[in-house]
Image (cartoon, rainbow, N blue to C red; front, side):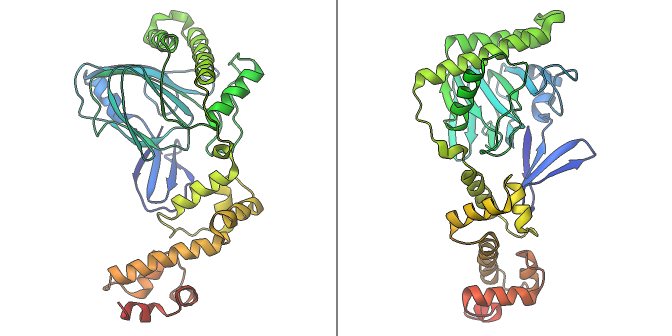
Length: 349
């Protein structure tokens, strides 16, 4: 799980903290590999009952190397009373399927806001920021499954773990449903709710020495039930949701939040998982500008705002804050885009 913190980095990149924990930066937001610390702390303090099988930074009993590779976390929490914590904005390292069995939880994904009610199931993809709690979670029992399918961008090919036994055509169909539909919340079938319950029993230790085998069986069953549910719902799929142009558009939207990073054409393309030629093509298609032209446009727009809002800051300070390496280059680009020098623009008020 990648948790959002405040930051000023304009590009989303993976770094290592202490050699172990990955982070991703996007605009003014920083996503750290989460420890789910609020939930873990509540479990240690007896505020909730929490059980999980996990690897990486997720809390729970450790999965051994080679066991259920790709499974990041599966488990549940059970809160008997309102809590003082929530799970802040984060992204996951894989696709997450969440079931609200009892009670309710405030849930936000992107700009959508929902209250998960009993039987509601939320599905989020790795590129979808979401949070639980408003800001704290309420009483209830909530299950989750996080499965890494090797993607971070919408257009990338999914690679399911090899311990899944679904037939190839079924797995491809499930992938298509999940890639080309992003309705965040749907009702779980009775069978799916029972499957989550069996997963909960398994991670609680009811599987004994066969815990890993039972978990594999129930995850396979859950995904098959999910496929059948998606088939029955007759969703209208949108291939554009899994197109490389969408990955580019998402990046450009985040870039607008803070364009001051020292971006190059190559690093922008790499961020999207695209080659320079394809990235440039989609950027032109979306903005009618080359990537560097669009980046300079964003920087100049930010500079215009700062020149008006921060009269005490020098033009050189503003140039640096907007990502320009020198005040001379800033003045050249500003005059080309705005028609006057930064000094004249500020004097006009």
